[in-house]
Length: 468
Image 1: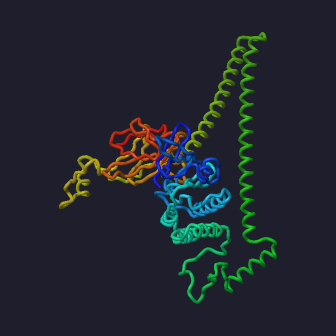
Image 2: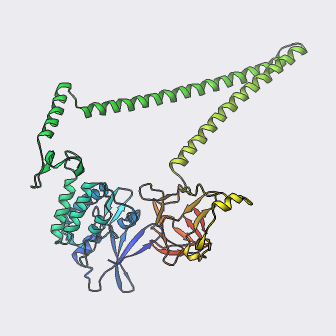
Image 3: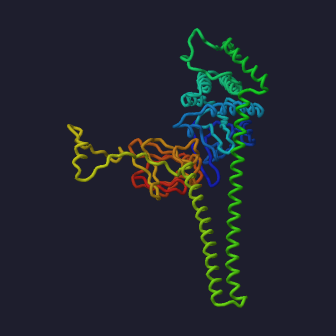
């Protein structure tokens, strides 16, 4: 389903044209436009130059293809998608809408960062192929055996009719909630004659052989004798340790507060004593020598109060600096380049020439054109640069979906993606970001891809770079 994207001041829209023969006053169009169905993208019908278009509101959402174009799909996300798909299918039945008109494509299924759920596109026109299941099977993370098996089963079931496919989706979504008695082990972990477990093939439960029954019996006896299982004891011990750590941190915080209060009181006492010594020289009739002693004592008290205040300020500055360093390590503004251990040549050094002596054709230098080399994005601050040797990369501030994290508030969770250009260089695509991606002062449209030349200025929100 070919779609374009449009962005106004407040909202982002996915635009799908209606077929000329579409009866836009029919039941499905009216139900879609007048109702807000949970899990279905809000939609409005617009007439432009005699043509009809459906405008789907995708503000704050990203398509599944955008999120997982260059990364693996976790098993938890797969089952979350299947649950949302099953829930939406049931809601459509309540509105008397045909679930076959759901566009099951990775480009038209969107993830909502705010609610953490998936939204689907309902198109009253032609019925489309369920491309999402092939995309899931190809991109599923292989370490999750259960999710991978579910993705492959659904990919095989995608060739059947839509009702049978939705039944398979419902079954796979329900399988996630069923307990697994053990993790699947590698076949090499046990021999054929000592197989501990096998599946009964009826699709109902696992059949456990005698050794597993004995282990289960031992766990039951242990729980009956002690009143708690090993897992419960470890869980309670872990919670006890966590509570102990929390109490220690609270005690440490209260002691620091007490020390700060005592220091402030001491500073006030020193300042009060200095003021008292100075006032004595004006209120009492004392000799000149005693006046000098009072003034000297007041100066010493002022110096002591100043030193104590400076020590408190220095300690506070060190704590702030350490906190900023921890935040910088946890949330880096840019990826650090891995250009390390490069050979160091000294001028006039004979050993360097001998160590790196080339022979034969290897001594000839080959000239590369600028189009064949990938440069870097250099920021305004020293050391702030984005390495582009491994493409594609995603720019954003979400650790789950971005490859290069930018900590500026103007950056969206998934802001832009950088590709290797077909003719060399790079291409940048804006991923419907809130504050936009700018090339030489021109803002890219939603999901628009533009080729970037050497010397171009690239801006993600308020973060500026130069491509060199």
